[in-house]
Image 1 (cartoon, rainbow, N blue to C red):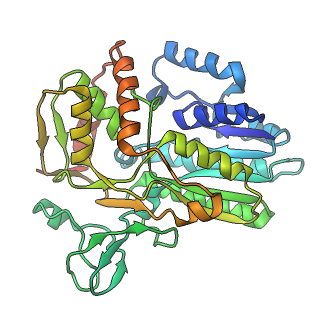
Image 2 (image 1 turned 45 degrees about the horizontal axis):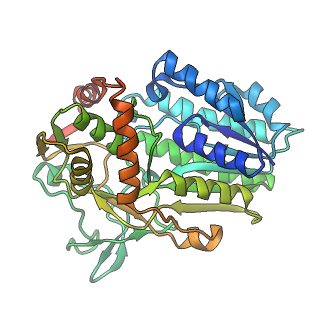
Length: 381
């Protein structure tokens, strides 16, 4: 099969490309090698050279509809990964996020549906962020969806949502694909737009489509130069260089961390699946890990002796908890995510420490926090 991967130079795309090539597929990658993600010119040149060894690598923009139209005539399926990523940054860099994520998806879909296109399947990288707050279980009312948290409550240090019906305490529950979609950041809004556009166009044109709602993807190879996304890469860099760590809220907020190898398996399974129609599917482990635990595990692996401070500050657009209901992943793609967090973290730390010690330090994270404060998006504390 001939497969096009947009945004394929990133750590999800490059690993997926390698897996597809290994099983005999022909792969073309289009990626603009954004400096925010891929680093300086020398680093970007290395990435391009490595990708060109096994794939047809094209350094270009996903909004180039003429190029995409040409590529659509030569490929059977698309894995659409191209996107700007970063919850906080998206709340003040709105034009860029909307343009790249939404216009880029529109360009791809326009190209995929013109006369002469061979594209029969589109797999889009969606996101758990499209749910906003995840699902919770109330003793009296069962599965509930509290929605956005109250700024007044968070200013008072009350971070956990409560039942929207009776205002009682609720417990975190796995979030199914049928949950309400209430994105809490511009980034999340654009990811929902990507998924909705792909699934709507696929229905209209009789294409097969999967919206894979990735949870928090991590692993060796993720960007260490991007200060706007990825708690593991951000905190590992700060720890390696001995800087203090600030944990937002009370540290008990949690995420479902899924290893990149499992995400690659899901991508490959979706590209190979025979099912027709459109399929939104969570890709995660179904296990929540708190930020406090993530920080402690990183510190242990890195032998970090610096200061860890739970500040009580919070970022506009952040959610409290979200873990995946993985029933559809098992039923439709016949897989589970098998790499547990601590095993994956040990691999990540070994790789990231070696990379960072080669001189990849920068002040990007401090700058990103200053930008949030400047735009009124850092609250509390």
